[in-house]
Length: 375
Image (cartoon, rainbow, N blue to C red; front, side, top):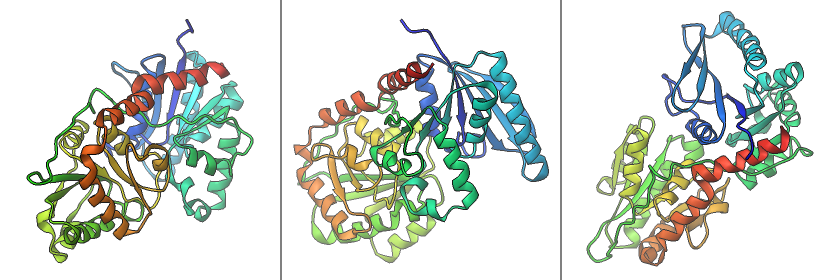
């Protein structure tokens, strides 16, 4: 039996009081790893407290750097680097696990060269999947290159992410480890569908960042779909932010009876809404490995997604349908095909795929295998 390791989890994104949904996939990775190893999470939050706080719960220790902007903020960031170096020396940290390379990767570099601590990187930022990266400043790209090239392992969430990161760090070791889903919370929830009597329930859950998620495109697809079929259907849009502009669009298109809006919701409420839907839709222009899609699969739902990010790796003819980004007509036809063929999907197969690929046990074991290769 391998010994329990102490993992220092550096999180560039992490849920906090001001933004409880920020980097929630990072928190889930930490919780998964904590089922096997000791975990300490380090993250920063914009706050006027200007102090470092340490808290403990059932899962792990959390070090929160409360830091304001301006000159004092820069001082607090330097203070955090010193604090983490001292913490590593006193608490026998075995491995540093960096989550989202920038900006916490600066601390990972310091720990490597000052404390001789190897680090791995989990990356899910879609900036590397899109030409946004080339639009970033030279300094940002230079620092990112240093961070990635000094990692003992790079752990992208998808094969496409790995391909993009190899442009930055071509000679590093890579292992694809996806996002994790709580398969107890997002449990198997099959619901029947009879075309002649039932309303088919689509759901879309996102930040509503239209440049990435193209939720307006989904609404236009609904307008097309109602012309394609007399079958009854509805779309529930669950949003983390204001959706008034989308309500106005639905009203202009005269499709308000087909679309409902809700949110923001806590995680258990999201699980409930997915359980009561037939299918989840993402119409993204770019993505990493979207958590909501694997959560829908854990519920046994066939999904519709675009040919970007990690979605082509999980959407097969057995699990759903792929469409081209921005092709609204193709999306409307895919929605119709899913309605017509819904009862041909093996929802238990979809659930089993999610269990084997994205469950807490599966992901924790994959991380632990990497850790034990480098300690």
